[in-house]
Image 1 (spheres, rainbow, N blue to C red):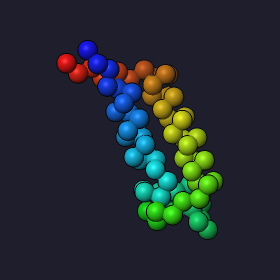
Image 2: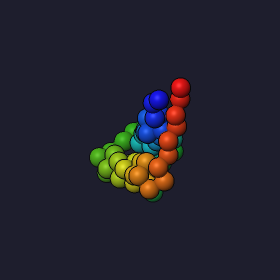
Image 3: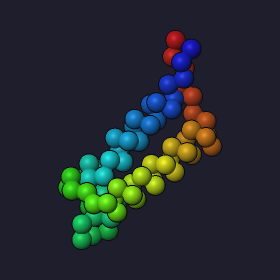
Image 4: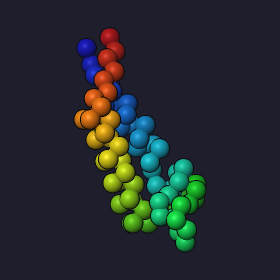
Length: 69
C-alpha cells in the first residue's frame, strides 16, 4: 500500500507556488505581481520559504496520508 499524500501535496504546492505563474512576492516594482512570468532572486527565496513552511505543516504537523490500492 503506497502513501501518495506527500507526493500529491508536494506537486500541488510546487505548481501553485512557482514564482510568476499565478503570483509573485515581491513583484517587480510592486508588493505582489500577478501572472507576469518574470522572477527575481528575492522572489524565488520568498516562494521557497513559503513552500517549505506549507509542506512542513501539511506533512509533519497535520500528517496527511492518501493510500491507494
